[in-house]
Length: 233
Length: 103
Image 1 (cartoon, helix red, strand yellow):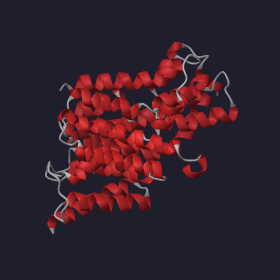
Image 2 (cartoon, rainbow over the protein chains, first blue to last red):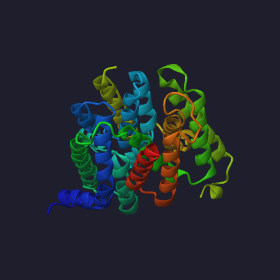
Image 3 (tube, rainbow over the protein chains, first blue to last red):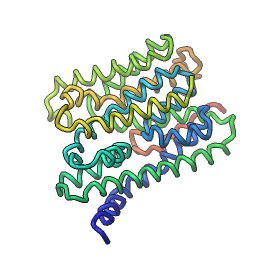
């Protein structure tokens, strides 16, 4: 087996445990996007055009709430800002690649592809074939996301319309947020964002959401700045 | 609103952020404050969605026991805290809502 191919399959293997977790998530996304009022085609293609799980869930919620397009785009941008960190972190390991490779790997750069790849690169450094590892991790995740979305859309279409399935979106967000509330700045960020969202609920264009998110991010960042690193654990 | 335009612009922005520093390697560093702030994006954005969903179920503030979405949401939070399992949280919250609506 050639070195590139073996690096690719190592990436797939390292990604595998993550794929098991991602699969039900993709199915839930597909079912809920359809239920939120997106067409079958839009629900499916969002998984390849945007290809970023949490922002896809948020988009489905905002489409359901009839938020205007610019607020949805702004929210997608805020939710996905963290990818700049992954981009910064992987950049030194990808610096010698062609523009074509950089473009392809950037498209595939999700939380789940980043995690095993950065561990691998920090551990073993880079070889002329190590970008194939990221390709294997990223592509296997991409494929899993497309298939699980399709299955979710298929199953979502069979769920009776009178079920309050729209409630599953906030429930999904609860499942994402609560386990992350491990320290005081995190809890304060969540609570202040929630309170501002309630107070600013009446603002037009769902702008209360953006305002609330900025308030929560600011509160968390300021509180973290005042803590010693030890307390953060 | 054109959903295709929204997805296209949202997708291009997302790609742009993924591509940005791989492309600009060595010419731009992420400032420390931004690095910190990014940790708080998910809890802030998601809580900003969750709170109104639970407390304004029909557009008005409802803090009573008749607010089934609030009660089901609190049950889901407990399940999420104890199990850290997405699927279980959704199932528990949905089951709670369906049962509370029957009562």
